[in-house]
Image (cartoon, rainbow over all chains, first blue to last red; front, top):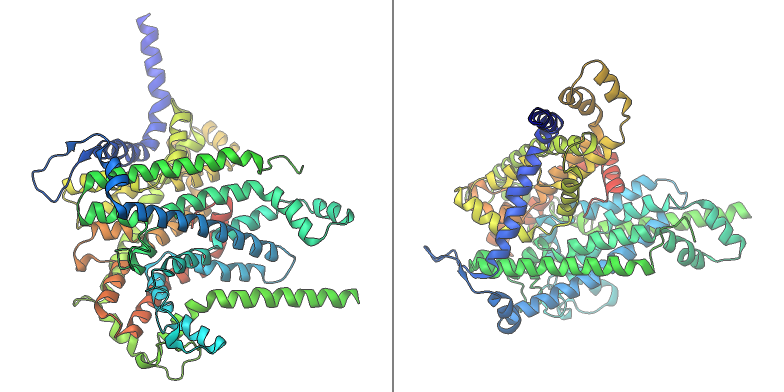
Length: 311
Length: 281
């Protein structure tokens, strides 16, 4: 009995020692830098913990932070509005652009790989500080965009508002910056379009369908799994947008909090005011929001996503 | 007749794609061109052909911020990027080999967790990680940025490499096993030499994401002498204000050069990486 157990243990080690050796870096990384911080931030979210006050301990306050957010932090409510507006406008627009351009490029034309590269350049550079700085410049009062508007419409450039400095328009410049970077989604759509059998289109044309009908009745349904994938990925990314808003709004969500993204408010709470407990609560709420929206999209996807081969 | 309509259609398509492409590229082109314009000619000058050309913006801009030149910021960024690449490739290929080829206890569980962690918003771990690194006295050094890469925290690349390794024929492993090669030997002798393309994609995106990263660098790098290009550029803009836009545009242009060079030399790997695994961006 005991000898067979030692054999089993030996077998267990023989089977597992090498694989776990390879897995070890990832495993340590997961446990120390993901799992532990997840639980820790959940715990911190239930505490009052400010690390700027030395010797201060995390004080347990239950759901206090979560209650404060909704009852005593108008900036938080504003940041939710800003982020929701940003996500729900920029993501659909970005995907629509990506899809339309991908369909145009999917025709049998020359230089497609060159064009594809050109359209990918904004995505390649778009996340950088350099582009955010450029954007701020382009859309400022008397800036280049206004120069173009003035040249086309004949309106005096001094009368055109500075888009970045206007609380009404600042967020839309950020939406535009995001939509501009549709390159990744476009490349994924292009790969998906190549998988649609040409016979579907032939059959559709024989039945007398026009281009628009072909697009809505063949392209979109056949591509729906890819649309779902892009939608989920872009949504998750958009909820976490930070760099561009930070640079363009000067780190504070200016003008008058019109670009105060959720992540910006979180960063300022955690690392400017050092309110680690409150910021952790915000981080967990963001996690819950993202998970909820991902779940909703995946749940409702059954109605419009087509996994079969064709109809 | 039919042929003619086809030609017209093709010309229209090309014109459409080119003009839309020009609109899209205009901001970047304007930045590059304007960085060579004399400072007083930049503001609201929409043209892409400079009336006068000067290198002054580059000379002035390169001097950098608070006595630290952009050369230093570049070196800092390059060092961080190269170390990140080595660490990420090493740790992620090892984990990917385990998931892609080996059998072990609890494999489905770990694999599921790995896939979930790709989707996990980074903000949920940011604060405890900061407190942890602060307790190691790592804040202000590069360690909080590079050490996580040694632990394969970018699970996304593990997934990418797993996909690639699963696509390799298993006969090679079997032949090597018959020749007396163990699981460690197979990794070094069979797998490593074959996963080149996936490693290039991993290295490429690690470089770009680290180069463009702002959030982590903002959190952890506190001394101007340790600043990266991203941070240096941000501080440079804040310091020079409205007076010196020429230099700001010049340094923004310089900051993008490495990404451009990599993109145009390794374009194939970009498209493969994005199309096969849906790299976000």
